[in-house]
Each structure stands twice: as C-alpha cells, then as structure tokens.
Amino acid sequence: MTLQEIDAAKEAALAEIAAAKDEAGVEAARVKFLGRNGSLPAMMKGLRDVAPADKPAFGQALNALRAAVSAALEERKAAVAAQSGPRDSFDFSLPGNWRGTGAIHPVSEVIEETTRIFARLGFTVADGPDIETEFNNFDALNTAKHHPSRDERDTFWLGPELLLRTQTSPVQIRAMLAKKPPVRIINPGRCYRRDTTDATHAANFHQIEGLYVDVVPVSLADLKSTLAHFAREMMGPSVQVRFRPHFFPFTEPSVEVDFSCHVCKGKGCAVCKQSGWIEVMGAGIVDTRVFGKVGYDPDCYGYAFGMGVERIAMIKHGVTDLRTLYANDLRYLREFL
Ligand code: PHE
Image (cartoon, rainbow, N blue to C red; front, side, top):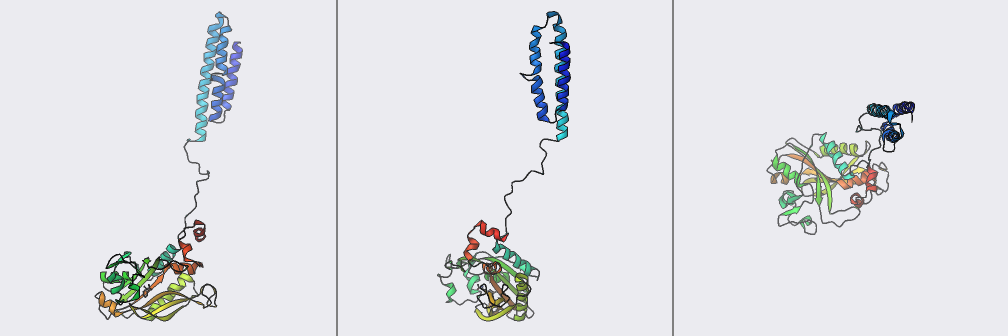
C-alpha cells in the first residue's frame, strides 16, 4: 500500500458516491467503502505491514480518507432524498383497492323516484310506524268489522288492538289527525300480510301511499291527471292511464289504475300478459266517512292512491319473480348498476 494508492482510492470512492442515483445506491457505496468487509477496513488492516516510521503519515491519510468518504456519503444521501421528495408522499399513480361501487336497490330506486316526482307537485313525504293500531289500519279507514282483511289469516296481529300494518293507508289517518286541510302527502313504507311467498307475493313488501285533501273541490279528473303525469315520468312519455271501477272501504268511488304497457306500447306482450295494460295501483275519492273519523268537515274533498313498490320495480325492470329482488344475489343486483 502506498500513499498514492490511498489517494487514488479516495478519488475513486468520491466519484462513485457522486454517481449514486438513489438512497439504495448511496447505501451500497457505504457498504462497499466503510462496511465491515469494505475497502477502508481492509486498508486499516494493511497498516500492520507499514514501516513504523511511516505509520503516522499512513494513519493520517487513512483517517482523511474515512472523513472524506463519510462526508461525501452524507451529502449524497441528503441530495438524493431531496430529489425523490418526502418518503411518505402519496403516489397518485398507484392502483387503489377497488372494491366496486354499490348500486341502489330497485325497490329503493322506485321509492326515491316516486317521492321525487310527487315532491315536484307539492307533496311532502310523510312517515308512519310499521306497528299500527287497529283504529288507524282498519276502523278509521272505514273497514267493516267483519271485513276479511282483518282476519288473522291475513293480518299479523301483535295483540288485541295492535298489528303490523297491512297497507300504508293508516298514514293518511295520521296525517289528517295531525293537520287540517290542505294535506298533500306521499308516504312510502313497509307493509305486512300473511301471504304465502310466490313470484308475485311476499309477506313483507312496500307500498307508496298518496293523499291530497283540500277544502276546494278535488275530483277524479284531478287524480287521473296527476297519475298520468306520474306514469309518464316513471315509465316514459307515451304511457297512458286508465281507471277501472273497484272497491276500497276508504274511497268512494274507487278505481284500479292501469298503465298502458311501456314495453309493447299497448300492442300486447309477455309483460302485460297480451292485454296492453298493466295494473299498477288502487285509488279513489276519499270517503266522507273517513273525514268523519279524523274530525274533518265532511265537505272536504280529497283523493288517495296506493301502489305496490315491488310491483312497479318488476314492471320497470322486467323482473318476473319478486323473490329475486330479495335473494341478495350480488350478481343479480349488479345488473341494476
Ligand atoms: N291501501 C290499498 C291496498 O292496499 C290501496 C289504496 C290506497 C287504495 C289508497 C285506494 C286509496 O290495496
């Protein structure tokens, strides 16, 4: 080992450190020169063979080499760190943990869309409990004491006067008991009936109720034009509405409401069972006897309507079996994304 060699080693080390491109490169240089098996410790060992008179000069040269290499390593490390930015900075180009977006369930979608359409007509959203009194669900809705829907084979009774509501119509009663006319509400909610589950029935389903009561005349024509507007908004601009006479205890006259089939435009297809029409809801002019039950002036006027949410979702999306809506099969529900 000569002093020139030590000098040359220093130049080579400094050049290599200066060329290190990143933190790993600087660390590799550190290991190579200062590490346990690095070149500096090897040269230190070589001191043993140097003549005693030359030892101080060699010792100084090696110390200077170590100092220069250490300083150069520190400096280079700081420089590459500054270049690459803070280590914990966020890399926007990394792919994320994508677990997929959720979709709105078709039943929720129909509820949201229906309430939105009626909200634009001035209806406010009302709510009521699933557990109802016999008075709100039947008596106040003018349902005869012997009416078959009260039977325990049709209604889930929770006690002598309490039940799981069989329809959203009791919310009409709650709304009228709470406020004088005008009342204009739309009310979506769960309903319960002792129905055996099949392709078109479920023991637990949803209805949307609408009620408009005023002290000025409200006619069947008003009801029809409002529902025609709803039909077009919901199903498409060419959909027509027709009324067929029916019976409900709390409306007189009562009607069943059909929409012209949005799939075949009334020509007849599988969705409308070749009839061109699809039954969508029940409706009618509020019976004055109901006004009597809630303490309203019998001279009030009003209309009410109620529709099955699952039914509308099925018609809209061409679903043939109601049970698929509740099977919680993500492959199926994703179709509604
Ligand atoms: N509640 C009725 C049913 O479940 C539907 C309906 C609501 C009819 C409002 C008329 C008025 O069948």
